[in-house]
Length: 465
Picture (cartoon, rainbow, N blue to C red):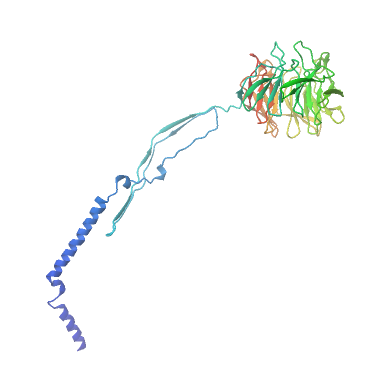
């Protein structure tokens, strides 16, 4: 009974004539709601794509990092080469992704479009010039040969005397590294060339000996005062001499040795005392010599090497002066007799002697003196044999050799000696070939080369390395 009752109630409900969706007013309401929804959808589409449609610039958003413009700066060290670079066309096609999100209440469409970037062919040419290691600076007021150059305490360079083939000068001039300019200063009391100049501890410059215009060797000396730009005479040497050497000792005295006097080549030496302005003789060299070199060693001794002795004999002997005892002692001989060479004291304490000439030919050999052993050892040869050249020790401990004469050829080449490797390498050439010039190392590390002579005559030009 109970089961049949439930079934009867279900059938009664399903078969009833009063179902709600059969009524006309309900159908009208349903149709209206459907029309309303369709209208809303149409309105949303119109608003999204017509009224609120993004502009073209907003639609096309470029997002291709691989095709973005790059500003490239090419930095090259100066060289003598010419480089040409050609860029080929490149086209990058990026993927295009479009995402559309539509909502009834807040329609939004996001469109990302990737543009095509094409790089047009470009040819770029770069032309550079060789490194200029020498720079021409202002000219001296006079062309000079066999003059002297001294670096003053204020950094200026004092040039004194010299000759131009017809005139021996007593004039002097100053080089200012800050302005690259030359100015004349007070003239010496005596014209001279082949003399020496030494910067003293008190800042004065001592000029001694040399020759005058009548080929007479001089024994007089004078002092330059940078504060007043004036020269004053001081005590004279006991012996007239030229082409001698002068070395400032650790005790402040100045030692001059050898050279040639009016009676021939000398072995005498003497000391100048700046405190008294007087010269006193000291022990003689063991050999007479001219055109030799003198180098100050780490222990304060003075090493004299080579030169020309009596009867035009080129010597290989060397000797040491001891300031404490005032005596000369012989030391090891050079491997090659030579004169008109150069000598440089290296940072490691060795002394480098380079080139010069012997009785037969101009030399390209070099050798090192070791104070600890008292011996000479050969080192690498220069690329060019030369005489009447200059050497300068640089801040990087290398030694710069400049110019000189090779037989009848005036050289413009320059070379660097590397003490660590014992080798020579060519460096930039001077702009003007020269020999019999001077070289002075400035406080800023540059080397000032002045004057000299070449096949065109005597020079007043100067340049910096």
